[in-house]
Length: 214
Ligand code: ITT
Image (tube, rainbow, N blue to C red; front, side, top):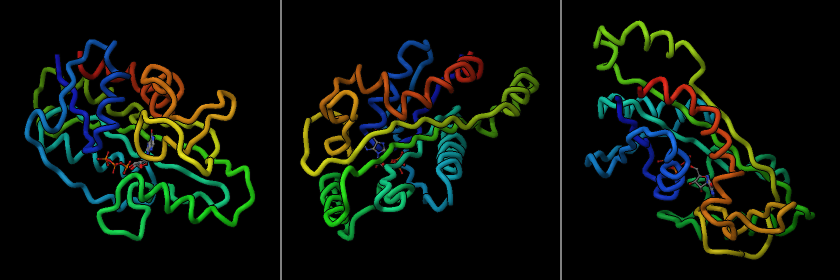
């Protein structure tokens, strides 16, 4: 059985992906468990390009099948910003999640509410070159690799001007799920992982992940 490397340096994502994949029976490995420190330059023009680059870099550095997530928050009043640049959205060097939330709210100050928005997650799965050379699995893997390995998930909501809740990470405290009347940060791990963008993308990826790792 092959292991699966969770190809991200974001601790919040690691926790969620571990939770989302806990029922697959796949042995999950984190970069810190194998002392793998990689800083992939995210210069793609789409989430899919960035997710693919991260998954391939981690896969070939570790020799393990790897799952990467590229995600972002798209705010309509800001023409879809911060989007692809969500992790870097602040004029401050070494900005924190809190700095990015404040910067977003600052940019929304003069815009009419509701500030409708959505989280977007793209999952990519990559097979390391070294696995291709194991002839016993080559044909099987080739077949799977030609299948779609990019999975998308979206979660709709609205940005609110004050922070609420302490769960999750990133923009969660200012992202309101309108029907629930709760921010993402007010949800339990179980609740967030039932309806988040990441949960939706991972759900679609599970069948191929099971085949790849069996
Ligand atoms: P990796 O590239 O190592 O996975 P990253 O944090 O740089 O980590 P991204 O480039 O995909 O990841 O940036 C996505 C950013 O979007 C992330 O840093 C958060 O600010 C935000 N984000 C994504 N998913 C989120 C979620 O579920 N809740 C809150 N914010 C989220």
